[in-house]
Length: 120
Image (tube, rainbow, N blue to C red; front, side):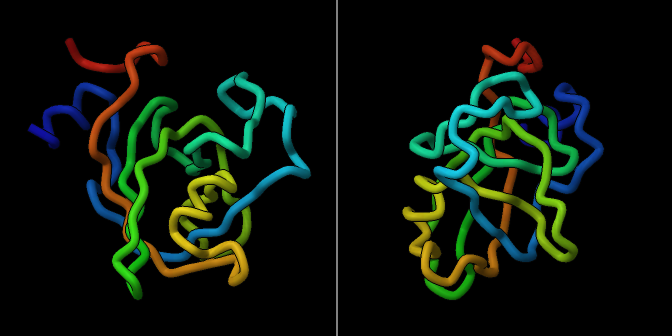
């Protein structure tokens, strides 16, 4: 089912990625994201370099097993070696606020219909 979902979303991306996550917060609140929505650090959203907007991913911190689901609504991160940039609320759920970065696994688990790229 998941490979079909990825194909329908137009994703040529792996279902699974591993690498570093970072986070961004209040300093960017209200600024437009790449999807056009204003950034709200209190939502469970994230930036990914290539996944379609509206893609829902499960982000798991590999050292603790803590996880959170986020919706991709922005582009980034732009720092070398990082695979996803989380809104502050998602980073708090992973308990990575103080560290700033954490090793994570990212898995595509679905999509949000309001972005218009979900299969029927």
